[in-house]
Structure formats: structure tokens, C-alpha cells
Length: 187
Image (tube, rainbow, N blue to C red):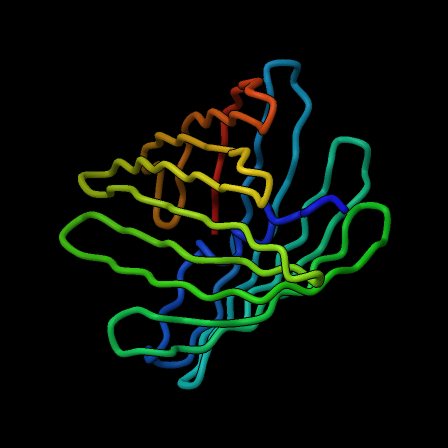
């Protein structure tokens, strides 16, 4: 069994403003590799008094798409959350995942970590840290799979307008191969 959690972890790491007033927010991120090919990720986040729903559609250079829908709720007053993510990959296979996590935001920094449990009980963990302020953002994310292999991401960007950022991201896969790309995020 292959454990597909990269999109699930992205959903879990997008932020849960649980307890905030109702708000729907949409954003789009376009990642462009050195070869000029792009991947587009569209996200709609709906926050309510009782939880957050996040829908993500990722379009690959081939035109195929993957989709994830996550529904999360607050479990503690200090940043704990749990939820379920349904992920449909580019070939149409659907899998449900359970998420348990903890996040914090304070004085220009953020942290988000947790556990993703797959349909056969296999677990992966994720850890995201970063900083923001003065028009700049940076972040690191590491996912550790049931096999012990890891996948990591490093991001640095600069604000280009209200809700918009651009910068560079570096991904290191489970085999150790690193690829870099630029990104543009807009709301």
C-alpha cells in the first residue's frame, strides 16, 4: 500500500482559525518548475464557530486533478484539532484519513504538528514551522512516513500585495532527490 498524505498534510497545515467568526477564503498557488511546467493548487477554506472545512483541487501539468476535502474541529483551547480528510488522487482512487494535531501562532512564528492515520491504521507524522513579518514568510515542513522515510519542504517568499506572495520552494522526496520551483500565491 502506498501512503498518500502529502496533500492531506498540506490541508492540515493550512490553518484552523477555529473559534473565529464565519469566513470563507479562497486562494490559488501556482508552482512553476525549472522546466516551465506548472502545478496549480486552489483552496477554499470555510471557517465557522464549530470548525473549518478546507477543499483543495490540484491540477497537474498533464491536466489531471486530485481533490481533498478536510473537515476539522477544535479539540482543545490551546490549538488542538482533529478531523477527517477525503483524498481523491489523479487516477480517481479515494482514501479517507484521520488527523490529530496541535498548532500555535505567536509573535511572528507558527508551528503545526500532528499524526495522520490511513485506512489500514498506518500512521505518518508532520511537523511545520515558520516565521512571518515585515512582508516576508519562511517555513519548513517534514513528513515522516510509516516506513521511516521523510519528505521535506523549505519555502521563502515575499509579500507582493494583499494576500499575495511569491518566492521559492525546495522539495526533498523520500528518495532524497531535491527539486526546486517558484510559487505565486494570490487570494
